[in-house]
Length: 297
Image 1 (cartoon, rainbow, N blue to C red):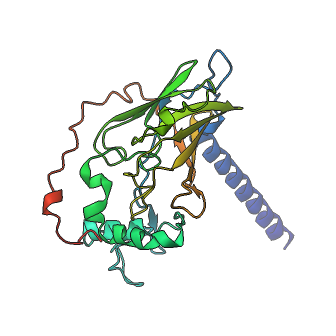
Image 2 (cartoon, rainbow, N blue to C red):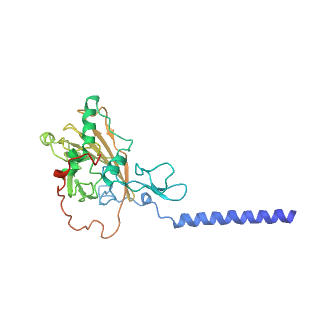
Image 3 (cartoon, rainbow, N blue to C red):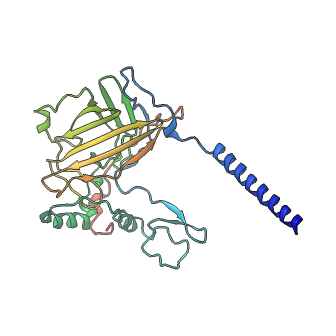
């Protein structure tokens, strides 16, 4: 009896030791935490935001693939035709219809003043007719999402948006002074797609404050329109090889309260050819005249 207990105890101890060794080996083989890398800095001590960043579009974005209890790959927001007991039915039934359906499942939605909800619903219902994306116009911020590439100097940053990155099919850029200057009174009265931006540093965070927008852009798909009173505050915080991108939108003309976009953590692309993309084909509106139904709804 004593030998059996000793043998069982030895087996258990060996199992624990093996499990511990395996766990330690897994940790050693795991990819290093990009946030733990040293944060590069400019000569003035400010974080250097320069780099190619894994930026996403401002709209709904790709749906997350997950596994069900049977190990089948499904999607977080599957096609509307899927039943509770169906397996592997996550593909689109209709790319346009299901794309619009799943995009509206985001719970973080801007809150409009009561008198503007009818307009939001009408724009949403007629997305194919009114969505600025279909006119190949700049998406503006925050819908275009975080910049794909940032170039930083001692006095400004250049924010580059690759063609198609935000859905517009056009490459765009912004040049933002970072010396803490106030908004220019005259430029603040202009109405443009990207607005008039100035930047300032709050510790290790770059804050970009933009005003002077037109009313032709949306916050996101779904009819979330804006007015020319919109103000956008973007915050860029680099930690190691990650970049935290945060956005707050104020629009007292149409919004009941400021809208805070879900924060995004971007990763630095360290590939030597990253960002060396071929010239993209410009966006071309060849379909809008033929859109006479609400099929995208």
